[in-house]
Image (cartoon, rainbow, N blue to C red; front, side, top):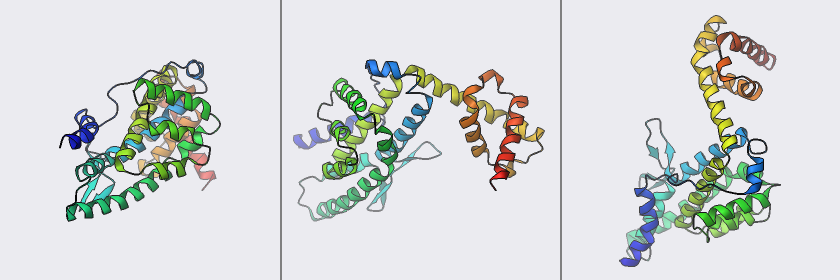
Length: 275
């Protein structure tokens, strides 16, 4: 019983901490990172990292619902589970000879195969983004693992894997939901630490978010002035258009209907040209 509780301890601690690997932020001290902050590593990179982290958290904890609750991606015995809850179940029935537990373990093995395939697909863009800067990434992950006392983390071995072999390495070494859980937790924590270790880039991202919100707030007024009905325009696509072309070059206090109106007109003409 004691050994069983010890194996469950990391999962129980994670759950009691709110089920979200965000409790303690580590600041990375790499000189390379300090030089890159705000230029090579900018607001775009922070946005990408945050998006990647949301995907990882969805695996770990389940998809985030509009009501703030989470729903697991994987169905076991009629109930949807996250990687966290499946890892807990896996530990609870480990070494059991009960027929019901054996059947559950077989079902877990099938789910693990599916879950690994899902991660490989979803992580592809992140893996590609690290190509060409893998040596720097290894240094940063190594520092993060040392500061978080995760010296045996599979994440570091994964980062050191030869380009193009990351999926194979993950498939081979992730042999349980517990390993999957710890790997994803380490990756989610690393991304959080990396973001917070680049204050200039993080400030760029937050400034963009504030501008995005400001545009959304005045958009009804802008649409009215342009005599455009809400149902006749894709607001999200218009906001993306602004972000990609103009948002970083407009000050927050400059986001007013007279400034945004001609940009809306330009966007409408642009979309019509591609219809």
